[in-house]
Structures are given as structure tokens and as C-alpha cells.
View (tube, rainbow, N blue to C red):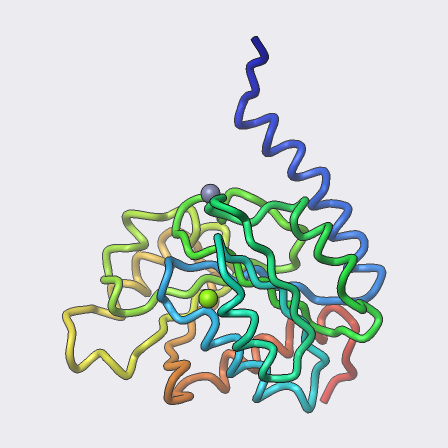
Length: 222
Ligand code: MG
Ligand code: ZN
């Protein structure tokens, strides 16, 4: 019998993540790993971000889904390079899947790589992909108890987008509570209140994203 411990799986994953990170750094590509539960609005946000920033940045996308090419088709309509990963049941992306996908992207022509993880509030946070930053989306329809119940993803993230704020008049959700609890878990978390659908609040998100790309040295200060 062979016993494999979770920590061995994670260590093997980290090794490949380091290779991905080295490759992305050598090509001056800034990579973000976008995580959320299913239906929080990742694909809508990513498509909107590409439409708004494609004059300034060359953006490519890796789409992670258990099944289907539905999201990749939506992203493809923006004109961005896109690779779809179907995990065939796995509930998160791992570094090996990203390693393989990177071989299908012309990294020399990319400033910003957006990785859309599988919709899941739990294990995506445990698997490094070699990204520069983890970014989390939480829609207000999911409830304001999520930081308390699922702290790990908040802890691992550099930025939190509180999405679907256009729906706040119709539901019980305290954005203040999300902010307070999330900042207890991660005091330097960047928090953006947005509606990917109406565009409200997205300018601050774009500024943050451009700052991260500039910090990586691919863009001149402007
Ligand atoms: Mg999606
Ligand atoms: Zn998983």
C-alpha cells in the first residue's frame, strides 16, 4: 500500500508552481489567480476587464472549469488569447495544469495573464499556481458571513472584489461586515466594491491591476 499525504501533494504542486513563476517572470508576465464560489461573476468581471484595458495591456486568459468551454467562448469574444482547462471533476486548478496551458500561450505577447479558477470557495486557495497575486470575488448574494466561514481564501488573497453591489437594495447583506471581517483575516487586503454588470467601482480595480503590472516592470509609469 502506498500512502500519499496531502502535504506531499502540496509540496509537489509548489515545485511546479515555482517553475511557472520563473517562466512568467522571465517573460515579464503578471499573473493573477481569480477565485470565488460558482456564480460570483468571475467570467463577467474578466471579460469586462479585458474590454476596458485591452488598449493598455495585452491580456491572456486561462479558463478553469470542471467541464464545458462556455466561459472560454465568452472570453474569446473579447479577442484575448484563451486556453480552456477542463479538470474532468477536479474542484480546483493545480500548478501542473497551468504549466501545460502556458505552453499554448504566446507569453512574449502578454503583459497580464488572468487565470479563472474553478468555482469553489475552499481548495483553490490551497494550491499555488505560480501566479503573482490571488484575487477573490465575493458577490453580495452569497451573504456577509463568508469571511468568517471560509477564512483561508481571504487570507491568501491580495485583493477582494465585493461584486453585484447593484443588488444590495434587494437583499440582506452588510458590506461593512464583509470589510471588517475580511480585514481581520488579512489587514492589507485591497477591497473593491464593484458591479461587473453595471461597471460601478471597476475603475479602482483597474487602477490596482495596472499598478501590479507596472510593479512587475512591463509597463512604463503613466
Ligand atoms: Mg466562470
Ligand atoms: Zn479542489
